[in-house]
Amino acid sequence: MAVARDIGEYHAGRVHLADSAIERRLFGRGAAAPEAWLGDALLRHGLHKFDEDAPDYALVRAALSLLPRTDMTLLDIGCGRGRVLLYAGLLGAPRVAGIEILPSRVALARRAAARHLPDGVMTVLEGDALALSWPDAEALIAMSPFYPSAWRRFRARLLAYAAARPVRIIAVAWLRDALAADRRFALVAQAQMEWIEIAAFELKI
Image 1 (cartoon, rainbow, N blue to C red):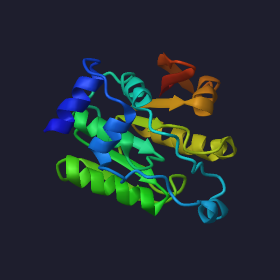
Image 2 (image 1 turned 135 degrees about the vertical axis):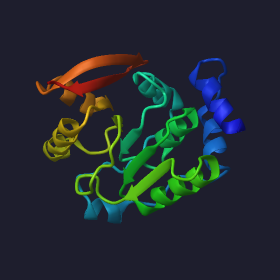
Image 3 (image 1 turned 90 degrees about the horizontal axis):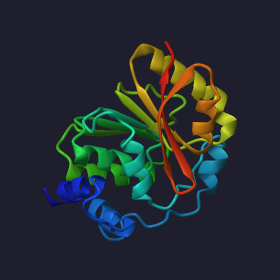
């Protein structure tokens, strides 16, 4: 598959692809256009972070490079349109799952998964990640899907999840700082991409 080959070459650093070129490969022309005003969603779910950042696949590459293997099962909390999930699935992850609260993003993710990945590889659940059950995975990634005001609730869910199975947790921004300062989590790997610090954590035994 051409898209899988391109993502593999990009991840290995053998080719350069602009973010816009990767977006077109994954979502098609115009499919990843900015969303309409999110005021209603913000009113309904005030703890969530809805302002999805511009695509930055160098950040995705750096984050997934902190995993021991590219074939680890993955869960993305607040997965948006599924960029990280699609990227990981095309690299060879046998199963990737995400949770996203906005239906428009869930639809984009599912449509792209049907286009690029075999049936059953990618699952996207629609709803509140602080309320839904989290699918089993060997790695969990959270690109700061919540505002810091949700940290206490998110931490409780994360502790319960990590206590039930070995899992590596990838985090950036304020969530990375919160986990680094938390005595229950151990820093096991980190990367720097320009001014962005990315880190991997595991639950301390």
